Amino acid sequence: MAQAIEELLKDPNELSEEGLSWSKEVGMAFVLPRAALQCVPLAANEPRDGLQRTASFVSMPKASPKLIVAPAGPCGFGVFATERIASGERLGEYTGEIRSYDVWCEEIKALKMRRRNSDASSPFIREELYAAWAGSGPAEKGVVIDAFHKGNLMRFINCSCKPNCSFKSVSAPREAHGRLQVTTLRAIAAGEQLSVDYGWYHDPATLEDIRKEAVVAYLLDLPKLQALRLPDPVANEADSEAVQLVAESLKEARGRPGLRRRPHGFLAGLLDSEALARFLESGKHFSEATTYRTIPEPVWLLYEVLGGERVGIPCRCGSDASLNSSGRCSGIIGRPLQVNFTGRDSDDER
Ligand SMILES: [Zn+2]
Image (cartoon, rainbow, N blue to C red; front, side):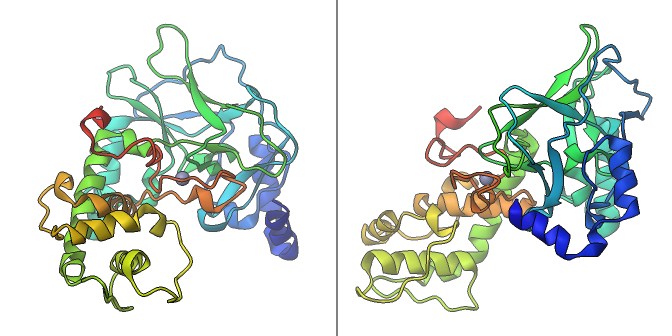
């Protein structure tokens, strides 16, 4: 966080009157940086689509004074703890517009149609990344709290494969949707970012998109993958990153010793070089795939993550120690870690 705050301080334009009034409106103790002025400040949820405010009886805690919004690398901005926060502490409410899920989905579809002349769901657009599930709603159509256009500091909480917070829906017994309370799942140290699991991987339609896109990415690379031969697999810089990584990985397993290796990045870690080499040596080859199930085993995890990237929900939380100090990231928002979950064993189906 020291670096994040330094970035704020070296640019005097980052702290502005507008940022101050935004922060006052939502009860945040620190000034919102100018570049983070992306939405209308909202102290309380705003109902739309004929929906009502719920849980009006609940005394939701005010925004914790221990939170600051600051630059967070590739994620843009994040919410950081300025001092230690205890486990189970209630940090405030995630506010936004209360939307009927089906109406909201139609709006997103129409936006995609306007922008790219196709209503294909993938890739996601920014507008759909700030909606959090709040319950089944009065007509069982689902209700989301959408903080894209209007919200408070909680909309800046990033995703982690090791989340330290959750959004808990709070409602009265007969209310079918609730307010979202941000609660810590464990103690948080000063300088750590708040994080939640936005769980996109568990949404059936999104998972289907990820798998479809994994096949597309694999088929695009297929001719190049088929051209890789042991002991000297050749890929060049014009090839996709995946093809280059597979070639590197094969070289690592069976190439001449002593060649300089590229340092391992996140994607390279999804390949088991020994398994790849054995795959080719056993006479198998990279074959056509019609579904995600027929992508060859040694490259499946890599192409699944690339599928998630094409859908627009990559996770790289492990590369930011303030977001996930364990460094272990699944690569897709909401996906369990690969060591626990292959993504296509029959036991995995749920
Ligand atoms: Zn992650």
